[in-house]
Image (cartoon, rainbow, N blue to C red; front, side, top):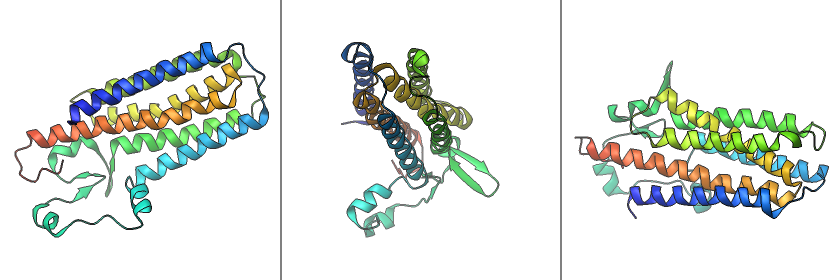
Length: 234
């Protein structure tokens, strides 16, 4: 499957998942059920664990693969001869990928990963605040939370699809992603009062984040394709 076809496929899956979420919220679990405090703690705990996983993968994107394989990924001798570039902030250290990185003093950060890290940290704080709220106190705002959550995800995908975008805009868009998922999770749980409905956005968040990664890989492939250098890291 070509990178373009893969992006279209993941966007279709993401839109389908959004439709499923709305169907569950407004059809599958009507009328509302009373909120159980233990269910609320479980939803919040799993969401926070997902945010911690997201932060760890922004620091080291390949660690799950390395853990499963029980070995560090290493290049073959053939790759050592043909690969002429190193990596800086998860990107090749060439000028073509300069807009994908944020320099700060002696360090450089991947703009997308930096945004996800900030958004995940903020979402952990928001979830902790929510867990201390009285069960059901957020229910009146649940419809607004779901709407704002989907708006945030839409902005993330629209900005990500732009061929030319600055690093700061990319950071801003990715900052919105995890708080948007937080609003969807809380909104779904509050509007249904059901544990499984509350966990559904957490499960679907892995699809939406993966779709965002596929768009990023698509941009990387196009950047390498038009670059006159022969290294072709993507």
